[in-house]
Image (cartoon, rainbow, N blue to C red; front, side, top):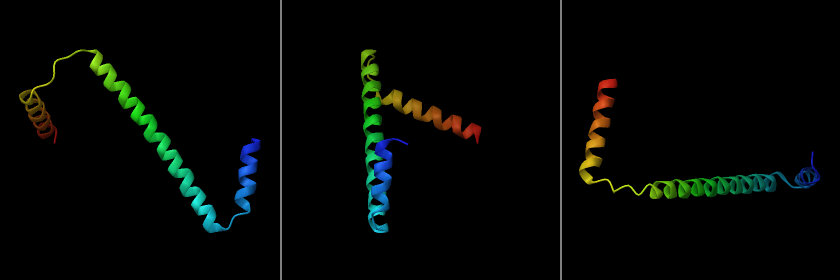
Length: 78
């Protein structure tokens, strides 16, 4: 166990249960924020890769055709 982990555990032992629950909530909040930040970064990288392909935009008709094809495939598989 690292010195920081030991220090945190010792400090947590000194807190009343209600405060420990607050610490847990805060740690979970920080972890979720890190996950969102990482996901946003990956999304930005994906958009950059897509943009680098220089593909023409998809038309509304093409989108509708994809939706209909997906629905048809789902019906046939069900």
